[in-house]
Structure formats: structure tokens, C-alpha cells
Length: 266
Length: 207
Image (cartoon, rainbow over all chains, first blue to last red; front, side, top):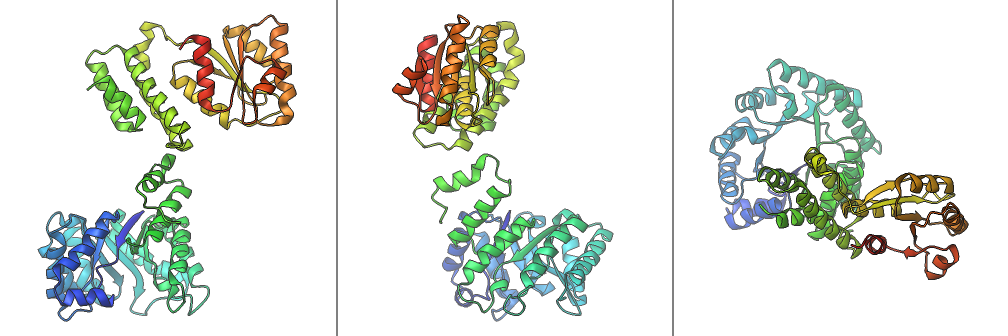
């Protein structure tokens, strides 16, 4: 499974502090430790810092000084994403854009960048009417997005649909709706799926337990990628164990490798 | 590019390296049988690591797969040399018992060590053992058992072999087997672990 490391996000108060202080060493430490934990992408988000564009430029340069791990540019603002793409080193078509949606404003701003650089992209199932409550409405938005990208000649292998999980605290069926979306999107459109893990447990105690089992069930429904905290050994252990259970780890090679590197925590 | 490197790659389960080295050694003119020997050395090390608990069962299975991949490359080159092996062994889980995990491990290690193994499977009637030994002339017969209730089947099978005048050595293997059971059923060797089985084979076939 594709792992997107979530630590470099200004929504986390402590991280926002080190970003606003331009503490390069602290930022680089988070980047290096996530890379060492085996992430495929490093999410970078400066939306909660004063000047999002300026901080994004600094963050991209600072992180790329210490790691070649591809970046996941996390912003709703096209100009911020453009800046990040411009200053990033290496193959720009390796950069994951987080995200587009079927909201008109996002399509106008971000879609041209996705097409120009042919980047992989996360597509949220939301439009100008908001996040739909039902499975059917989310599938319908996903379908419209797939059609639009296909029409533009975009390689759909690079599309990761995020059906947007809503908190269990709001409605006890929200996880079930999400699992069904994962299966249906894969079945109907043959595109990849992705999710963050923390929304599901919003305003619940012991959130990590809920997040971990949520991840396992998502993976059992064929989810291809997750945005998570790779420094959490237990969540990474869950990833390794579920891949083994889902038959994606021939001879348990990766599981045993993780075991010998003392990376598994029960 | 050496045979030692190949044995090591095999022991470390480095599949791509093993295949690369086999091809390289072949291309460099090393005798195919010597390459097989190096692979077997690696397999013996895999077996040792399994016995000591450093390797897990899935890694033993993986080793078997890697070996198979390597042998697929080597086989066309071996035909000219007459498929040499250390000797023929007939093996099976006795009548009434369908456990095959232990037997399969021994089969894998015996094959890896260069024996020609005829695996009769599980729940094998004594007649089938007799027939197989007659057909192959195997000097060693392995009988696997897990259920204590199948001790009678061990005794019957060995008696059936002897009644036909077949004097192949018999090794019985299973978790609960001991010297007393061996004597009671009339076997020549007993094995609790896979490496015990290999030792018995080494004694019968002289290494």
C-alpha cells in the first residue's frame, strides 16, 4: 500500500509552530524520520501558516535538502500548488497533488496544473453542493471526475479517489458508507482509492484504536493508499500485517523483514 | 561470481541474485552439477536456520520456490550429465493420518540436499508403500505420522514391506515418536525434526 506521511501539516499545532519559526532542523527531522519509516510520499501543508505560498516554497526547499522522497502538495489554493511545483527539484510528474474536487473553483485552479505536469492526484468526492451523505451521490461525483479526466487524456492510473470519510460521532453508519464507496469506486471505475484516517474518530476517546481498525477494514476493501502518521509504530504494524493477510506479501517476506528490523509492535 | 556467493545468496533467500548467479556461472562455464551443489549448500544452510528458529516456515517454502526457479534454468543443461542424485527415498504419511506439514518440510529439505524423493502424499495405504519401493528400489522409506492412533498403521506398513522381502531402511517421523515407538513398530530410525530425517538419509546413503 502507498503510504503518505502526514506529519508535515500546519494543521498540527506543534508543526505549525516549527514552520512559522522556520526551524529548518526540526522540519528536516520530521521529513527524514518519516522517510526512514518507509513512506512513499511526504505530505506538505502550510495552509495554517501566515503566508501559505511563501511558507510552502520554504518548506519544499527545506525538505528536499534532506530527502528525495516525493512530495504530496497539500493545498486547496492553485497558486500555492503552482509555486510548489515550480520550486520542487526532481521529476515534477512524481509529485502527488492533494487535491482536486468537483467544486468549480478547485477545478478551475488546480486541474490545469495536474494536466500541465501530469502529476498523480487525489480527487475528493465533493462538489459545490458539499460532501454528499449517501454512497450513490459520492459515486456519482467520482464518476463525473473520472469522465472529466479521461476526456482530458489524463492517465487514470494516477488518480486516487478519496470518498471523504465523515465522523462516526455524527452518524454511526459513516464508516460503513465509506467502505462501500471504496468497493464501488474500484468496481465501477477501476481507479485507486485513498483516505486519511483521523476524521473517522473525531471527538472520540482512544482515537488511535478506531483509526487502526478503520485502516485495516479499508485495506480489506481494496484501498490503495493512506495518509497517516508513519512514526506511529502500531499503525505501520497494522499496514504490514493487513498486507500479509490480504495476500499481498508473498512468503511473508515484508512482514518478516519488518519483524527482524524490530519495526513490529503488538 | 563464485559458487560460494551463490550458496550464500540461496541461504539469504535473495531470489534475483540466485537467478543472476546461476545464469552467470553457467555462462562462465561452471559445470551445471557444481552449480546444483552450491544451491544445495545454500539449502542446507536454510534448513539449519529453520531448525534453530532463525527462519520461519514461509521462508523454507520460499527457499523451495527459489530452488525450483534455479533448477528450471539448470535442467536443460543437466540432461546430458544424467540427472545425478544421492539416492531414492519413498516418503508418505501413513494410512489414517492426513497431516502433511512435517512431511512436506522433510521432502523439501531432502530434495534440496540432492535426493530423489518420491512423495506418496497422505493417508497412504501399506500396499502403495510396497508398490513404490518395488518400482523405485528406494533404499530408504520415510513414514510420517502425527496421530498416536496411527501407530498401528506404521507397524502394519513396515511388516508389509518385510513380508514382501523388501529390506529398505525405514525412518519414522513425527512429533511424539521416540525410541520405544521405533522398536515397537520395527523401524530403523526415528526423527522428531526435519534435520533428524536428513541425518538418517545421510547414514543410509553415506552423506
